[in-house]
Image 1: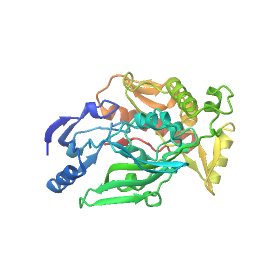
Image 2: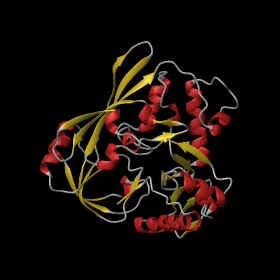
Image 3: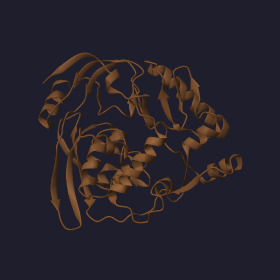
Image 4: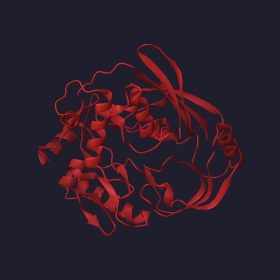
Length: 332
């Protein structure tokens, strides 16, 4: 059991903010993870993957757990579908590539999303009309408080928009995820940008869809190795009927979509742009010039500077349109 002390967390968050962790562990097996949890029962704990959806504004006075649990194996299959288990530390896009290259469909629209397999169900990642909840069979975890192994069915994960029981409770370390993917593929148009990228091809191959998603994302989103960022910073707001009507009074062209029986989803990027913050920079922090939803770090080590900027964006959108923007990104 290798425990490190006073570790600099700058390499472990994609915003590259500086902070020290009191304790830092990288368990390579479920058993080693259980031993660490038993040994450091009283310490505050945070589990991280690639650190693509979080940043630090201060030192972390506790134990950071960064699992190193790898492996991909086929559990069962028939002529129509296949179930694959992937270790939590497997790189998400590498796993998508693995599946697409073998003709397994269901996650191709989620290509190039940064992060690990284990992080995907926490956030219920989604893009281009697809969500990870639609292909997850089981999620294997270790409960932080007890060290006991618990397996969650899809229903028990309590998936909602960019949310899950794992994000809500933060009581579990995900060790692996089991996906059920399809062996047959037929393209269904779900997103205009993607269909446009496919140049009107009504029957693209699985690989062509993955390439199209990658091309669209590369045009819209900055490389975090060049401009540190955490991807989409805010959730798209869900509005009540009255909120929707008030918004359309202020912004008649605002995009609004049905979201459930009584809710309506609008675009956080649209609201940020209309508030004058697309491409806006303040000091060493700003929004990306090609996508208002991406907050980028132009050179600060301070998480507090990033936090100050995003709070300013939230205030402006709230003042202008009376809509609160909720971060997707975890802030510590």
